[in-house]
Amino acid sequence: MEKRKLGSEGPAVSMMGLGCMGMSDLYGPVDRGEALATIRCALEAGITLLDTGDFYGMGDNELLIHDAIHDFDRDRVQISVKFGALRDAEGNWNGYDARPNAIKNFLAYSLRRLGVDYIDIYRPSRLDPAVPIEETIGAIADLIKKGYVRHIGLSEVGPETIRRAAKVHPVCDLQIEYSLLTRDIERQILPTCRELGIAITAYGVLSRGLLSGRWSEDRTLSKGDFRRISPRFQTGALEINLGLVERIRAIAHEANASVAQAAIAWVIAQGQDIVPIVGARNREQLKEALGALDLALTAKQLADLASALPAGAAAGARYPEALLAHMDSERGSRQTKG
Image 1 (cartoon, one colour):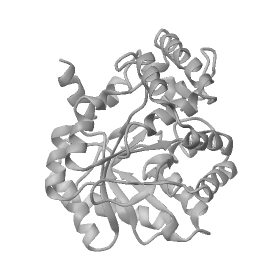
Image 2: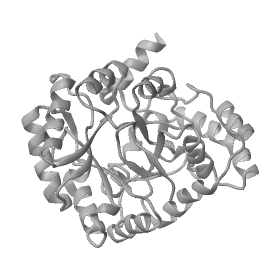
Image 3: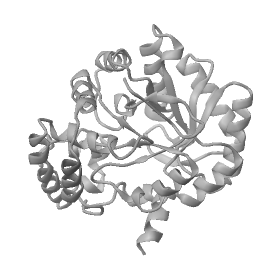
């Protein structure tokens, strides 16, 4: 599989990464055996980048990856770990902790659960408003010196925070939501990253299933599925968003692709510095996603997709208001709109 470099000083990774969160958390029941098989199939297909968070399934996701990769050479796997989110026994979100001592603690547990000696990319999941970003980045930089971390990444932060972090230590990538339905980063965040030589690892490329081409208004969501509280899946907003998706179905058909493949291919085509993180939870979804790598959309088809779903067209916010309050990237976006 073709590789793309994460930033001016970061690693070369597969041009598509696998997001493992949904195999343990937030999207309903999962078949663990199928999840393990999916991770292994991804690695065998040439995907090298696995993305997780130490709070996904309260550590279960890291244990899952441990079991999936133990037969593979460590050098074939690049693991990206987010840390800092605080949760309780019921799965509720209780803020973020990015203090230097907390980071050392989080890392120690991640290394043990993953069964590795180092983490390829380590990043705070969100900005901790009580801790200057310089302290957080400095603490990870110390872990790099000790050999426990290879590279520093960021997640869901805005331009000012990106600049401050990059002054402390090189940042290889910013992980942030980016898709045909979520294009806010194009205004300020993406230009800032390109100026500083920081890549984008884009999650949510299928907008949590909206861009799969298979979502329906009458779909029943299980208890604990994040989409039950996601604004874009609520009555009123969902109908509008599904209508937007129908606009791209004909374009995908013209390219002999599924809606999902067209959506992923569009993200891939936005630049060599962008790596989509697909959240396939089973081998069937993975196979479809991998098909996007062979899809050569024409300049007209790319333009038609962008025109069909113009920036800001989606109904509803990306996250519930309570979670948006913790997102530095969203605050920057709102200031720009105002």
